[in-house]
Length: 155
Image (cartoon, rainbow, N blue to C red; front, side):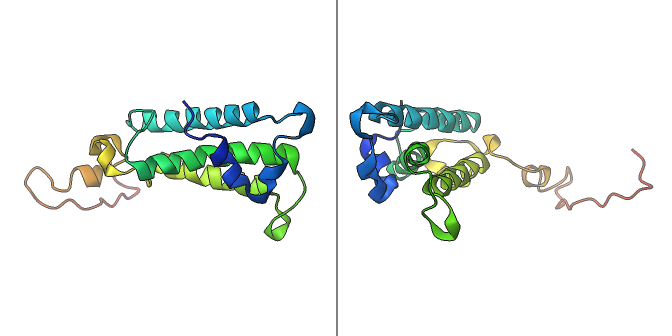
């Protein structure tokens, strides 16, 4: 189930959305754009499943909106690459390069867990942790410190 619909994709294409879909049924069609959004949603859901989040996400609304925008940005990027390959942005970047960078940054944030809200039921054991976070004290109740390893240390 895609998080984004046609209107969301058009919103991220900005003024270039008037040129989509091209005349005479040439690709990328609206169906192509929705298929791109569906592909992005599948990638997003795979990352979320790996993080222990049940998909498709239906709450909280702010997180669903983030996922919707991420999916729409991916679709808008592929559509813009097909329709408007010329440079259009700051530093002579193309619109599709700008959008794809935003999409990849969003995926990185999902992989790190930075944008996943606590209210969706991900337990702390499913998020990345270090040994020192999991074991703040040793068996005697003393605060653990990061050990110093030297070349001469024997195991």
